[in-house]
Image (cartoon, rainbow, N blue to C red):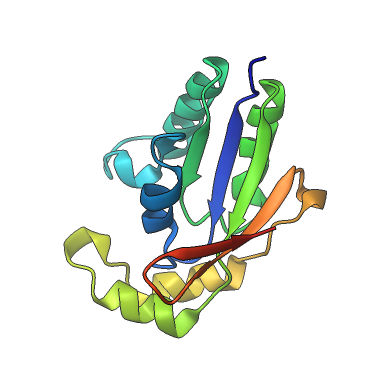
Length: 153
């Protein structure tokens, strides 16, 4: 019996651990889509991201979207795409830890570092996703204090 594809939507501040979580916990099972992987000067990065998500879902593949995805404005189109392809949708919620995100962000170099004002602007828009938003499952992700993650529904 074939399993349905899943769309994983990572939701959290910059430097909250989303990319590390993907690498350690989802890579190998999920294809990765992120606006960070689309050239900064490219036109319509949102459109490109959605095309990639649609392609993976149409092929029956699980795909993870690793962006801040702070509100329904970002995740609603993703949920609709998943539903159109019969995929389940899982939100991975990284509760805000502003001091931790600012500290980890400050350690980044070059273009990977986001101005602090960008992290704070995301915080103002950040909302916890719920099943009422169309997600089949919402999982909370926190650092476990040992270099890994604790994930719970």
